[in-house]
Image 1 (cartoon, helix red, strand yellow):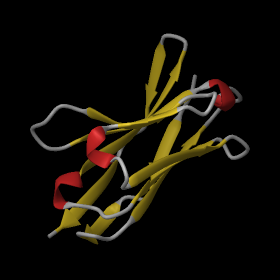
Image 2 (image 1 turned 135 degrees about the vertical axis):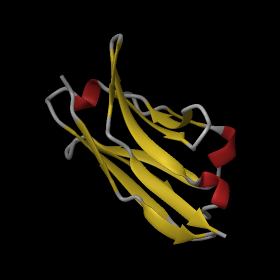
Image 3 (image 1 turned 180 degrees about the vertical axis):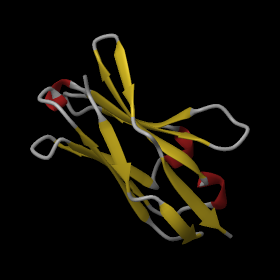
Image 4 (image 1 turned 120 degrees about the vertical axis):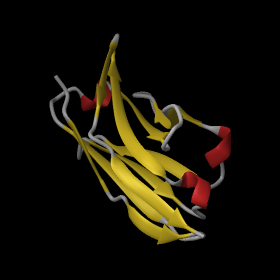
Length: 115
């Protein structure tokens, strides 16, 4: 069982930055594929970025060059650095952990970007 707790959301103006954190419980963090997803009102949840246990990273096209995902295995934590935020980035952001065929989700943290 993996429990995830996100933090770092908030209200910012367009062009500003935020860093989200997701702390995971347990002893298998190094083996987890960690990802950030987001869901805006009335829209489906979508992948933002994923970092695999071996370090490979994938980004959604709409955040390339602006967001950076990273992980600290010593702290059981994954981060999402978000720069040059846009109003369309407004959403609830969810941390995801995947291990074999099981998915775990955090409770979400709200990011609101004003124009």
